[in-house]
Image: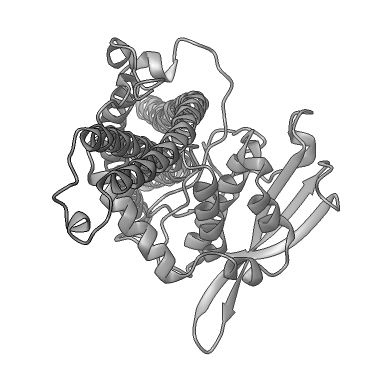
Length: 466
């Protein structure tokens, strides 16, 4: 019984592809673009007055508003997060977001709901989903605290970024075949005041006890972890490292682009001022100033595409890597509990066998006048009861391990498909954004050169005729 359903394939580890590889991202396929998420640490939303090269996104993306008409007919629940509002009390200042839900599901009493939620409410929902579905991949939330390099917590750009991230979080759940039917998700979307439901959870002391117990169990070494989950753990380590590196470099590129844009905006006006004092060079200087202005608009479009497209996708999967690691640890914890009960059963059986061959005539109870055979029989009956209880627990835990493995494998496959689609779309958009940026700059400077060549020819003709 101990090994049932826990042995993995020997070649499972070798079958896992490298993260971010061409096969994983599927660039050879013509997949449709999937949703993107905003989870940027320092992304800001720069206004591009007359030029933007941000690529179009899918109708259900966070950049565009979520509408009923844009979704496939099979979807029966639609969630939108918008209208952030600041709240100031004597104890704290916080932001709430309006959540509008439209659904055709029979378990909902109405077809439309509108509630307001703050960030802590989203945390409550995530904790509840992870508690009820330990080995399902619950979508990540944006970081709770303001990180280094990020704008002020109540800054308009930061609030807009978080709003889009929360919108994506809820729609990821709404698209999930299991999480979307969670009672806690329904409560989150429909109940006006969550306070009463939050109080129903375990207290702080109870949570602390569970945490200590979980930490103690994770210290225990897993004896028979399936090879495929060991391979998945190795995959996540590499994936987290690569995504973290890409995220940091992309953040630095965006920062340098913004600094370059600031310098270019200071650079152009100098040529305009210069043209006022140089009559013979006035037209060329004004042409350079105009070209620099057009290039500034191209850079603004490039920064918008980077901050609203590539960076959010990269940072979401940095957070996803942490989520995957936690899910794998929770799966290991379930198996650790199973193996500990198997070890306890083995020890009890050994005690039972030892008791059959032991002599209780010289025990303390025998000296008190108790019958040695009766004492032996009582101990045997007690051990037999404990063995029966352990066998029942092991059967339950074995089923729990099988369900955990099955749920995680199925949800892992679903997550992998979404990841490939998201990153493939983000990389393609980034490539097209860069192409459009360079084409715009190239066309600007080619136009300037052509105008100068015409002026040169005119001046030459004038001189020759004179």
